[in-house]
Image (cartoon, rainbow, N blue to C red):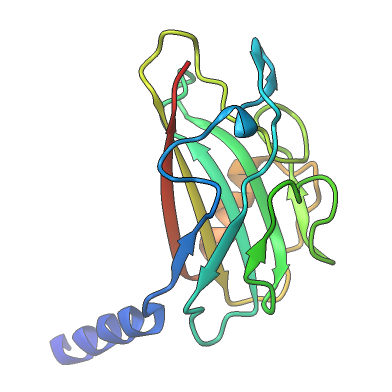
Length: 174
């Protein structure tokens, strides 16, 4: 039994390989460009450029999430959830949210109540918040989710079909 378990764990790690998420816009910090415009913030609310590489074998689509675990809600804050990004797409340009998403991609309602990128807006004077950008390689070409699906349900469906994931973190305070 132990050799089989070890073999399965090793296979799972090998399948993930060096799956990596990067951004030419984010260098560890968000800027006014990615700050929300509303809720007391006055940023430009532009989604950052994201690109990923070393896609795991068997990937049929991608999902992206942006999550702030430091939001003073008791459950964090979902800033962006995108599903059904086709498997041949490995880059989202800056400002793509709400405008020119890849064909078939669905932006899910964020915690601001919009179906687009919702930038950073931590409370004034709070410590800088962590914004975790994650791309998920999924084993299905499509998740049957509508834009008004809430982020936790989308997260459940994403996690149920994840082959591998890659994250990067940026900070923002005001």
